[in-house]
Length: 66
Image (cartoon, helix red, strand yellow):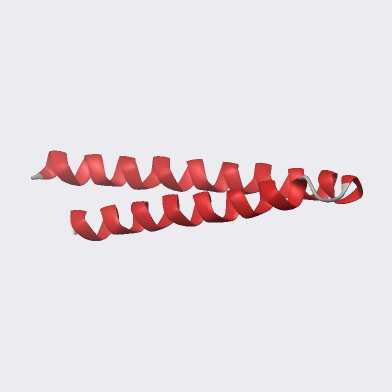
Protein backbone atom coordinates (compact mmCIF):
# COMPACT_ATOMS: atom_id res chain seq x y z
CA UNK A 1 0.00 0.00 0.00
CA UNK A 2 2.73 2.47 0.97
CA UNK A 3 4.82 1.34 -2.00
CA UNK A 4 1.89 2.04 -4.31
CA UNK A 5 1.52 5.55 -2.86
CA UNK A 6 5.24 6.18 -3.20
CA UNK A 7 5.04 5.11 -6.84
CA UNK A 8 2.15 7.52 -7.41
CA UNK A 9 4.11 10.29 -5.70
CA UNK A 10 7.15 9.55 -7.86
CA UNK A 11 4.98 9.50 -11.01
CA UNK A 12 3.44 12.80 -10.01
CA UNK A 13 6.85 14.38 -9.46
CA UNK A 14 8.19 13.03 -12.75
CA UNK A 15 5.13 14.20 -14.69
CA UNK A 16 5.45 17.64 -13.08
CA UNK A 17 9.15 17.96 -13.96
CA UNK A 18 8.66 16.88 -17.58
CA UNK A 19 5.60 19.05 -18.19
CA UNK A 20 7.09 22.01 -16.35
CA UNK A 21 10.29 21.88 -18.40
CA UNK A 22 8.31 21.66 -21.66
CA UNK A 23 6.18 24.62 -20.68
CA UNK A 24 9.20 26.65 -19.64
CA UNK A 25 10.90 25.97 -22.99
CA UNK A 26 7.75 26.99 -24.84
CA UNK A 27 7.41 30.04 -22.60
CA UNK A 28 10.52 31.61 -24.10
CA UNK A 29 9.36 31.15 -27.72
CA UNK A 30 6.59 33.67 -28.20
CA UNK A 31 5.67 36.64 -26.01
CA UNK A 32 1.98 36.49 -26.94
CA UNK A 33 1.71 32.92 -25.65
CA UNK A 34 3.58 33.74 -22.45
CA UNK A 35 0.50 34.81 -20.50
CA UNK A 36 -1.39 31.62 -21.34
CA UNK A 37 1.64 29.42 -20.63
CA UNK A 38 2.34 31.19 -17.37
CA UNK A 39 -1.22 30.46 -16.25
CA UNK A 40 -0.78 26.81 -17.25
CA UNK A 41 2.49 26.60 -15.32
CA UNK A 42 0.87 28.08 -12.22
CA UNK A 43 -2.07 25.66 -12.44
CA UNK A 44 0.33 22.76 -12.91
CA UNK A 45 2.39 23.81 -9.91
CA UNK A 46 -0.73 24.20 -7.77
CA UNK A 47 -2.12 20.78 -8.71
CA UNK A 48 1.31 19.17 -8.24
CA UNK A 49 1.82 20.56 -4.76
CA UNK A 50 -1.75 19.69 -3.80
CA UNK A 51 -1.28 16.07 -4.87
CA UNK A 52 2.07 15.83 -3.11
CA UNK A 53 0.55 17.12 0.12
CA UNK A 54 -2.39 14.71 -0.16
CA UNK A 55 -0.14 11.72 -0.86
CA UNK A 56 2.26 12.69 1.90
CA UNK A 57 -0.56 13.09 4.41
CA UNK A 58 -2.10 9.80 3.35
CA UNK A 59 1.25 8.03 3.55
CA UNK A 60 1.95 9.53 6.98
CA UNK A 61 -1.40 8.50 8.40
CA UNK A 62 -0.98 4.93 7.13
CA UNK A 63 2.51 4.72 8.58
CA UNK A 64 1.17 5.84 11.96
CA UNK A 65 -1.53 3.17 11.79
CA UNK A 66 1.11 0.46 11.43
